[in-house]
Length: 341
Image: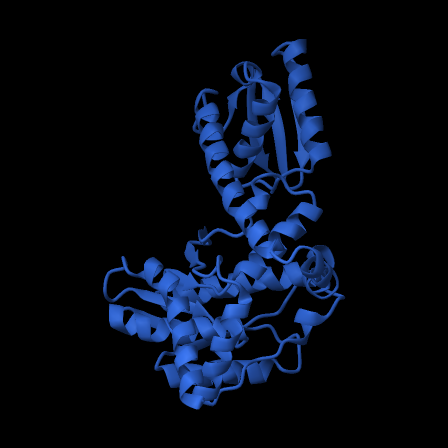
C-alpha cells in the first residue's frame, strides 16, 4: 500500500514537472533562477519539483523567502524555507521587510508591493533574472473574479501572465493551468519525505482579507452551483490576455500615427481623427507608456472631454489637468505629460 502511494505521488510530481520543464528547457546552462518560497504547499511543491529539474538542465536554483514580520509564525516560516533549501541542495536567501502604506493600499496590497520590492532586491543581489512563482489555476480564477468585481477593464481581466516583468525581473508562473487540488498532495508527500513541515498561514482563511473572504464565503457557493468555475475563469483570463495583446498592438500603432515627439507629447489634431473608442484607448496606453497611473473612468472621461472641447475652441487655448503626481497639458496643439517635483 505504501509503495503504491509513493508511486502515485511520484506520478503526480512528474505531471507538475512537465509545464515547468517546458518553461526552463530553453535556458542556457549556468543560468541563475530562483523560486519565490513562502513555505506554504504551493511554493513548497514548486521548489521540490524545480530542484532536480534545474540540476538536470545545468541551471543554478536558489530560494527567495520574504519575511513580512506580520504574524508570530514568520520566524518559523523562514526557518522552514531554509531547512527545505538544505534538503534540496539550494541556497535560500531571506529578506526582511516592513510593510508600509497599508492605510492607503490595504494590508494585502501593501504586503504584495513590499514582497515584490524585496524579491527584486534579492534578484539583483544574487544575480538572478528569473523568479518562479507558484500561482495556480485557483489563484488565477480568484484574481479574475476580484478584478471583475472591482470594475477592471479588459486588460485587467487577463489577470496574471505566465511570463511578466517587473523592476527588471522576469516572473514565470508555470502552474497557472494547474488546479491546487493537484499541488497540495505533492507538497504533503515531499514534506513527509524531507521532514520539513508546511507553513500554515491563517490569513488565507481569514474573511477580514478580501481574497480570503472570496475563498471562504463565495467559493463554496460557486463550487456547489458551478463546479468548473475556476477552469472557466482561467480560460477567460487566457482569452482576455490574447485580446489585450491585440489591443496593445493597435494602441501602439495609433500612438505612432499621432506624431509622437521625444518629450512624449503627441498631436491633438491627429488624435481627434480617431474614433471616440480609439481616442480613449490610445490615451490610456499613452499614460501607461509614460509611467503614469491609470485614471478612474470618471477622471478619464473628464480629460477626454476637455481635450475634445479644446480642439473645438482652437489650438490657441491651453489645458492643464492634475492627475495624481502628474499633469496632463496641451500647449500649441501638443498633448504632454509632466511629473510634479
